[in-house]
Length: 140
Image 1 (cartoon, rainbow, N blue to C red):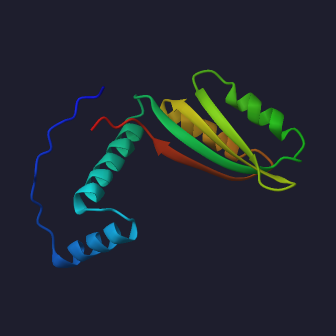
Image 2 (cartoon, one colour):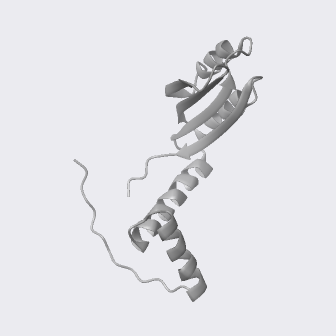
Image 3 (cartoon, rainbow, N blue to C red):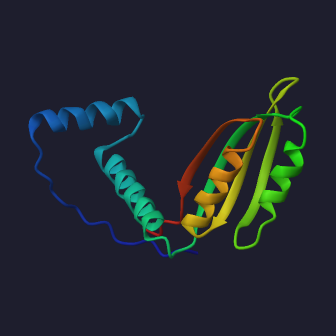
């Protein structure tokens, strides 16, 4: 079981306009407090920094949509995902309609390797949309 860390109260000074914008975003995104919103912003920056570091293993979620009637595309997708140094943890395949499929591919590895894989898959003929969501563990 994870040990709960002590919470420390801090004070931040902000210009009135910036505080109004902060409060507007808190409401529009459904946060219960400024603290929750700020904690998420900090965690987001930690994930960003891990991806920028390029030497720490991270996780990415590649979302793609494609025409499953495109000749040879399914074989190419499988081939690309079986390369070494990239760990494809799992993928989910959904049929959107007669021609279009949606897949999410969860990938663990070094940032440059994951980004290369995302670019390669996104560039395959028949892939109509590709977006990489960057994630990693945040132990704070």
